[in-house]
Image 1 (cartoon, rainbow, N blue to C red):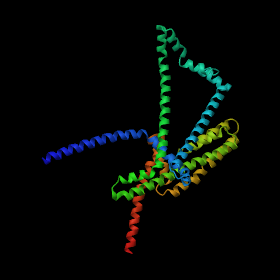
Image 2: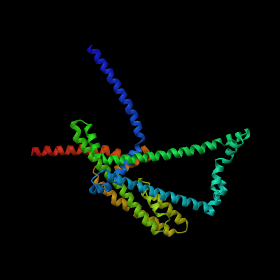
Image 3: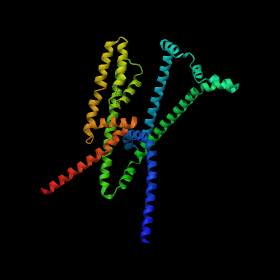
Image 4: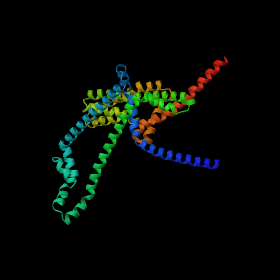
Length: 368
């Protein structure tokens, strides 16, 4: 009887374990979809920490400072996106009105730039399709089959664009939610994590969370400050040399600084080449050298040593490897995910070494 009961318990345990593993697998698959949102949310948390930390000193309700910070970030994104779209529309119009560009487009691609609307309707065979609806006959149906691949491509492109836009909006929405609730409920989340481990490991887990927080704060704030300083210096140089759209180009320079190796030179090098081939060789050389020294070097000399000085667990080489390796393995989101994953073992090793050294110190003091 006891043997039968034991077997039934084993079967019951096996079934429950299988169900938990099955559900956990699908939960992990769902969570992987939101990895970009998680990474962006963490980045927002750390780069905006000085703002809401300052507001928390003056506002008792902890939800309001976080909400104000999120609103500031969203407003900044909307303003920049609006400015970017206005510049893009202005430049596209300028290109279409340029005689040289108009000549190339009309001769090489047989496109009438004076009436873009009619060219778009022509590209999707609008007149043919409307004629088939008005006066359907076999010949025109045969013509529709001829155009079906092009129509299908256009529809699929529009649908793909809508899905991509929806994906970006969804990820950003989840990211801001993670940032909001991650800051507001940070103490309860920390308590929940520490309660999941055995009592003997609670102290280690508390120290680990603290060290991870320090590591991520130093890395993200260091890279962010480097980017902002790079963009500011680039803006001043672009203004000095009367470069068109200095705000847009400086922002692009700052964003590219977040990517190791690629950096700011991807912006100022083409501008220098355009100056050089336009007959301004001396201006092009001075512009390039000035950017190379001030934009590409000074921010790194100021901020990167500060990162290394503050961050005891991850030196600048490990940070660089984590950025590049993360991008290779996980794609663009790896620029944020890489340092996070690298900080986990670095924090654990640091704590183990620190605790070992602490135990040796205590043991030595006891012997003395």
